[in-house]
Length: 152
Image (cartoon, rainbow, N blue to C red; front, side, top):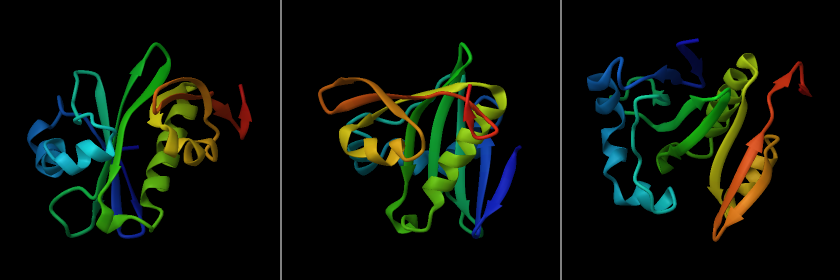
């Protein structure tokens, strides 16, 4: 899966090491944004050698509407960041991106781990995540891989 269409958006996987100029042209405005940093719990978005990016881009627009960054480590998919521009919220785009990511993890038999603010926990619980720890306003969540709708 390289790319799918969803309600007028392109959802596609990218890696900075494969196409850095194209990726950063799409998401550069989010990497240095104080607003995005605030919404991501005070942490700046960053990139790493093993990071993958799931990008949502509205057809006809030059930049991304949203993103998920993740890496695969030790048979686990670690979701690092997720952001959807406020102008594109309320249309199911972020949920579609997460469901696509869950499908990727499940197809590989990988669990997914992430850290989110306490306010985001109910949203992720609806997708099958469970809390395995907390530190201040942060919760560490995990979701086991699923095959045919069942937990492994």
